[in-house]
Image (cartoon, rainbow, N blue to C red; front, top):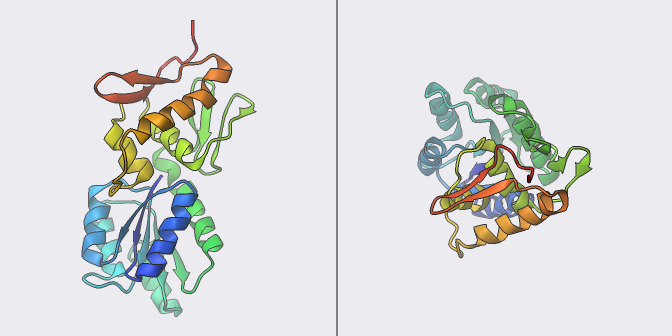
Length: 227
């Protein structure tokens, strides 16, 4: 899942990016409201973590504009204010939840997971292809009753493919969704993770779930069993 953090406190933003990335999310960061609004409009984020007091455009106005445009991305607002009127204003502009600074990172991630579960009505709660299943909210994967342990990045690659329902994901698509929009490493890292996922979800089960589409990218096969 791809998360947008709009936070002008650079140390806090960097801390959130490290923590969420370690949990398997692809994370983009904006340090001002104008850039944040632009990113939220341009990319299909799973959720936005949005500070209220931002340079350029505050969080209330960002949330209000997104909702006016029909963007229903789940929004978790962050603020140093603790008054009930501030919380009410945030919720009235369309935020889904509200967290007062300073906060526990553990609580923030739990709130984020709750938002993602509630926001999951636009896509299936559990993604499936044949007997292969993946539950984004529980960060779980398996075939039938057999659980499969995936690293955060492996999980992200498989989730990105399953969400496409058989459509092709290019290497760039996977880099942007599983790593981040500003990834500057070797793009062949995608092939490395595709191979790692295949070794876990296919090889032990005699299956071929992920198809390489030459010159285009990768997709989930409609029928993943050999023979």
